[in-house]
Length: 571
Ligand SMILES: Cc1ncc(C[n+]2csc(CCOP(=O)(O)OP(=O)(O)O)c2C)c(N)n1
Ligand SMILES: [Mg+2]
Image (cartoon, rainbow, N blue to C red; front, side, top):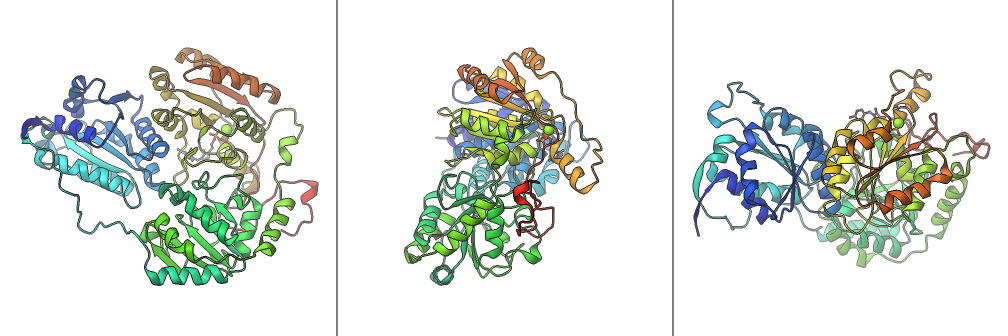
């Protein structure tokens, strides 16, 4: 039945019909009519008042990554909208489905440099999967429906809807559209052709030294079981990208661990020696390939990917399949022949033995090492937490030393490497994750980028435990300076506030640990408290993350941790 509604009312009706439970946002002039409707919606939809619109986008993103649903963020025009750009770019690079709704100056004022006017669709065009400027209230509901559809289908990503103030205020006779969404030129592919399946099977069944590269697509497509089926049936070892972590249990005997710049050495050797790479929902980012000219030189390559533009973009492949990963593997797996690949697996386990990096966990140093702190967090959470890591050395150490058994238990900014992602993303995730602890692992530099969201965490009593790994440096940049800029530590020593006093000022418990033996007992205190808690881990300043493939170097040319055992090793 048609009813008279305003554009603002239509916005919320559409969000409710999409099943949205929580919106992260910040009000301002051009979005006020839409905010005004919230007064009538108490209990139906929860609005989280953030402290900076970047935080809103990361919260929506964290919520989306944890829940698999579309996250929603809202802001006003001009500065509100431009503050969202980093969050949009972060979601774009990591294929995270979010919808951002921004207010815009009235249609009649657009183009006239009105107060708080920015060409937001122009600014965000390259960092959104799609964006809209709504000029007629009659189109509003259909646009919102399309936005959610585009955000979550195919290769997911962020969509922005810019709504001028007069469109929010306009009244129309409204009936919710229910016709199926059919967008010209946008038809996410479903499955592989018979020829593609045959070609893939031919390569898989004849390979002696195959490797599965498991990326974010494994999680996004929900293909965890299918990837394991393929691996187990064919006795094929797996390595994951950073965002693929959790897609395969860390403890699975065929999971070698992470690949790439700070990956396990054995995985990079296996990739370089392989005769077949089966790339599953990953995009051959430069951080995982190193020098493309020498990348896995003797292998055939199968690439299964939902985004056609990724096929043959960085790495030429022999069989490129543009379709949903889970569907393709269900087509391929029945034809995979059982093969004895013990020679290949034996070689890999020799590499694993020789290149084990775990020694530093036992190292006796005057100050605890960041790696030891991360490992202690793994122990203190029994490997069961959802970890939201930030960007830097601590992020790579988390990937190496926190073993994830289940999907969606590591949320991190991989593609854009956005410092400041973790605290807001964890707050967002806390609106979905109720049955596990959420721990933020964040550097002293990164926390200071979005520390303002501590107030949001307190206001919402978000159950997030914040572990600040304080090494007094922008550690990852310092590491590059040490290795490639003759140890000139230009602008990388960074001061911090007194985090304990800061926690007190914000109104959450704060603890400091500087001894490894105190970590677990301090964590217990944090775990007993329902709500946000901050723990500062004071760690060794000059530690490094190894192994490291220098940017652009050959994947096998890893810099190794100086250690007597590694001398003279032909790796
Ligand atoms: C927004 C942003 N600015 C700059 C960088 C470049 N960058 C990458 S890692 C890093 C240092 C991070 O320092 P910290 O959070 O203390 O982590 P650590 O490496 O010390 O563990 C910097 C500056 C970035 N990734 N993101
Ligand atoms: Mg640091």
